[in-house]
Length: 61
Image (cartoon, rainbow, N blue to C red; front, side, top):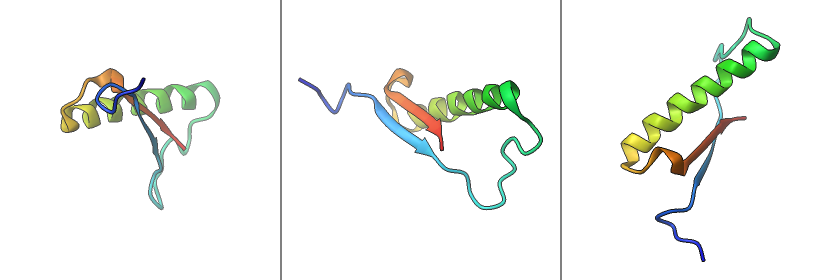
């Protein structure tokens, strides 16, 4: 059985128009930047929502 209080919250983040997210970065470095930003956003969201960090499963589109 699943519970809304313990299940992961899955979030897909989409940047806005004109965002320069990794504009000059390619390959492995871009993947590292994406992973780092996803971790920071997940931490900030979990803090703001008052939930455990491990419940937030965030990635970028």
